[in-house]
Length: 179
Image (cartoon, rainbow, N blue to C red; front, side, top):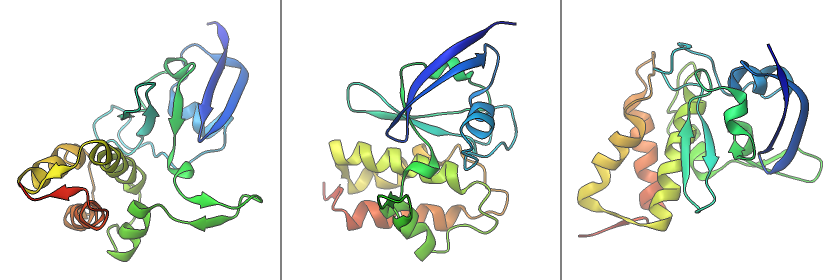
């Protein structure tokens, strides 16, 4: 089994790791090489989406990618955001302010055990960013939330609060228009 160098942008920082096994899953790279353990290994089969990260594409769009079934080398040269990269931090690295999605999830008590929360935060963030580029019609809102969050699994059944919090952020930021 061969090892290769991996270079990517991770939460805004350029990262180069000289020796990464070819068959290493991205979630293992994040946990073992970068000490970023917010992405959770749930099912290990790409079904629950607790492990997703955000990939920022060159065209300005973003997308979720499941890290339990995607090799680390897939992310070569890509810009990746993990749950640890959402909140604002000061120069010393101390937590300053949560992202609007994170704050609304806290305000709405959207999670119970929080195991799935990183995946839901990433999914809702991708939806908000999409709506910032192209606001949603009010008639499309529920369908857009379902399409974004519906494939994430919450074993504590916190779906209603995740959906409500996401709806609140989209509305509060003026990303829903009457149509």
